[in-house]
Image (cartoon, rainbow, N blue to C red; front, side, top):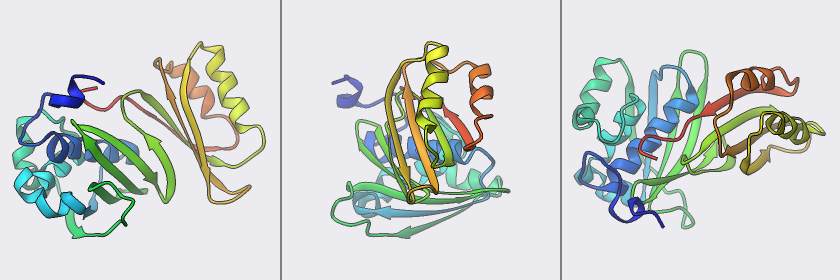
Amino acid sequence: MSIFEIIGPVMVGPSSSHTAGACRIGYASGRILDEKPLKAIVYLHGSFLATGDGHGTKEALAAGLLGFYPDDERLIHALDLAAKEQLEIIFEPIDLGPQAHPNSVKIVLQGPTRSLTLIAASIGGGSVRLQEINDLPVDISGTLETLIFWHNDTPGFLAKITAVLACVQINVATIRTSRVQRGETAITVVEIDNSLPPEAAAFLKKVPAINRLLVLSPLPGF
């Protein structure tokens, strides 16, 4: 266990779970959307809903959506800054079910050309877990460089991408594919130990089955 899982990261307080973790979730949402968000509907579950006001959870989520790090002093003014940036943020309650972590949130983002639905949890000490992207299950910690592929479910897809990674000596830490159903839309998440060279990313984007590839750097503070 890392010392940061016990005492939390360098951050604007008061809470590593409700503030720093929430900021990281907002930041991850914006990165995965990968364009300027115009509107966010943020559904708060459990403890995020019950005690979030006192812990600055709404401000932290807004700060992350604006691209701020958990230690950015602007965090406490993030809701006002979001309004100035013409980012509309609406907060709503939600019950994600008994299986959901108490510090869970569902974020629905809209940008100029694409939308994103993300479910994530702040699991303690500022650590987070991204659990769903556009209704497909994922398991992203944000501690490693992560490749997110939106693609068609075709035979040999994993063999193709792992072959490219092997050619540039990238070690795969985890890999997971989720799909709507056989032969349809799928998402594959690959956590890697190294940084993917830009030329390898450009080559992977040319694989016919891939609709979109995002290289997600480790979240701030990891």
